[in-house]
Length: 249
Ligand code: AMP
Image (tube, rainbow, N blue to C red):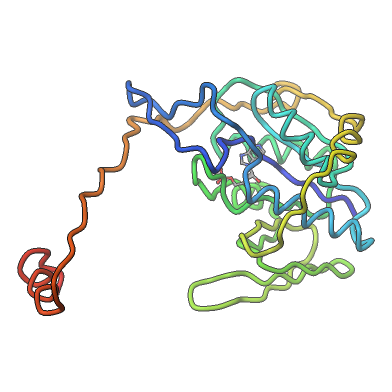
């Protein structure tokens, strides 16, 4: 069983992003970029499926700029067997990514696609769901546990107020939540091995996909700065302020 894992190159989660002065977006010049954290969890899960003998091959795929090759090398250092980059400088929105991924799925015929539940840059939480719709496959989003047996995946997912367990017929789409696993550290020998693994490069045109953006960003702005807190002498004053100043009780 082949497992496909889409991985996105995003601004590292430790970076404090700055809005550009013209409010067209955030400044990513000279900023550390890394693999989207939920995608690392997806690569780890696929690798564990391979180590358990459930998956036969793990393929990482990224869509975006040429530097996304670094992200794919990291995926291969974690455990992916090979990788594919759909290279473009166009700003990719979730529907375009889902269409590109569908083209790769049609080529590779995996039984399972494991994506992150959301990319921490656009926070869209759309690509996995759109891919499932385009393929007409079952989907289980926000997975915190995945078990695959035969042609069925059993997925525990985090929902409001508890856990839900779904049984899916493969082929299927799964998106990862934070608690699914803890990705392993990438070791130097595995980084070296990853350099020799196969990485194919395509363009959206090769795959016959139009990636023209459908959404227009009107403005990006910093959230309003929080005003400083105050220390109150006693509970009575706190209640009085909550009632009369903040008007929240
Ligand atoms: P989003 O819908 O943008 O929040 O992204 C959800 C998931 O879709 C990510 O965690 C990735 O697994 C996948 N994804 C989104 N954009 C890309 C991309 N450009 N290349 C590869 N995978 C992507």
